[in-house]
Length: 256
Image (cartoon, rainbow, N blue to C red; front, side, top):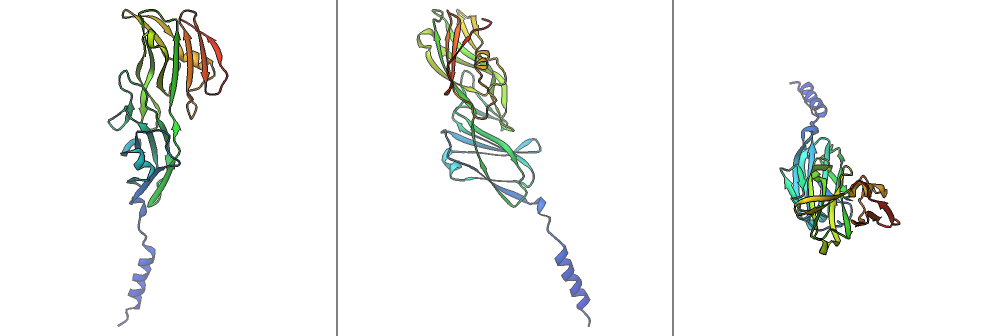
């Protein structure tokens, strides 16, 4: 009996038929490139085809220990990481929101593309400072008034770490305690940040903090946001803005 042609045919088939690995999942390991700079929780979101497909929340210790292992489809993705979450709210797996009359957490974040074309992928992320401390001193405030800082960014989008539009307001204190408050700001989209002076329920002064900060040369588009020190004199209508190691510059108040 001649069986050689059949055996040869089977051997040929076994050599040419290849497994389609593109339908297999990818084991994704997300870890920090260096030690984290803030306490609080870490949230990792994997976005594919414009939607969050997987999300993990870990402690700082778990994330630094390399315990963020996620199985996702083997196709291009955007990996977004936020660290330093303490009081902000994670809503519907899509946004990270600042609560009413709250301030931004000490957030560090990263959002970048990952191909995810193999069986496994190790993804070290470098996180950048995504908040700014505003050290604000108000001189000669209106007696009996209350003050607040307001803006138009109320959180971040977890799809790409972009600032999310919304109402932001944080009390700056009454005149007796306004000598040097600190408010943590989210990354701004425009110059709408303002100091509001309220007396008997009516806003009597609105100081354009955003325009003054921009006039100093500060940019909220920087990869790592710097902290801001600002003194506003309500009576004399002038402001002094200082940023990190920059030299102080006096900027005249405008439109108030």
